[in-house]
Length: 99
Image (cartoon, rainbow, N blue to C red; front, top):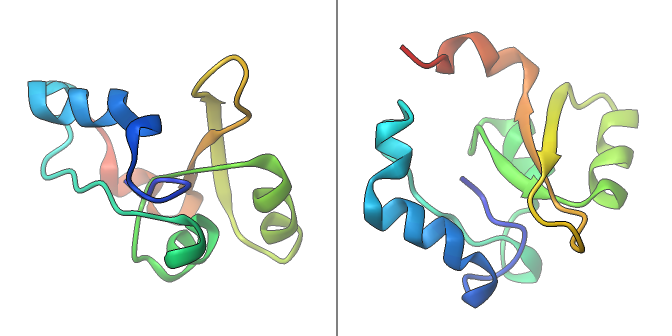
C-alpha cells in the first residue's frame, strides 16, 4: 500500500493494522507500506505502472490522472477531516480478490 506522504504518525492506523495482522486476516498476503509524497513516486504513477496496487491519495491529485487515462477505482474516505481516498487500478481488480 502506498501512503500519500512520508512515513510518519499520520499513518499510525496502517502500522497498527499491519502489526496486529489485520491485513492478513482480511485476506491480503504480504503488505508493505510504501512512502509517498515529495520523496517518492506519486500513488497515481505507482498504480499506472503496476509498482503498487493500492494507495492513498487526494482527489486533487487523482482527478487529473483519471482525466489523463488512469483507470482506477476510489473507495471511501480514510478520515473525516482529511480528504484521502484509497485507489485501486481497475485492470488489476480481479487478480486481488479476497478468498
